[in-house]
Length: 173
Image 1 (cartoon, helix red, strand yellow):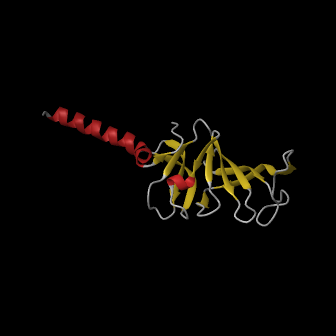
Image 2: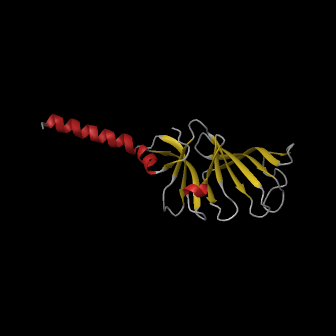
C-alpha cells in the first residue's frame, strides 16, 4: 500500500468516525438516573410535542401533562388535564396559564409557559402506569425501564452512535 493510499484510508476512517460520533440530531432522551440499562431516544423532528399520562396515586384518576420542545432545547409544559382538584392537583391556574373546566367535566390548565431544562419521573411501581404519548401513540415507560426507576427526560443533540446504542421509541427519524 502506498503512502497516498494510507493517507486516503486514514482520512476516510477519521471522516467515518466524525460522522458517527458527532452529535447532530436533536432528540428527547429518556435515561435512567442511575445510568444502568438502556436509554430511549425519541425523535421530535416530525412531532415536537409530547405528553406524559399517568394515574394519580391518591385519587386514582388520569392526569396528562403536555409538553413541547423550545427553541433553546428546553421542555415547556403547555397544558395539564386532570379529573380531580383533590390532594396534589391544582384548583386554579396559579403561576400562569388559563384554568378551564371542560365540557366533559375534566379540569384543564392551558397556555402554560413553565420551562424546564429536564424533567425527572419515577416510573410507577403500582398505580401510576406512566405512559409517554407521541402522535397519539402510547409507550408505557415500564416497557423500557424497570418500575421504580427514576428517569430523566432531556432534549439534547445525539450522535448516530448514541442512537444505535439506545432504544428508539417512536421509530421516527
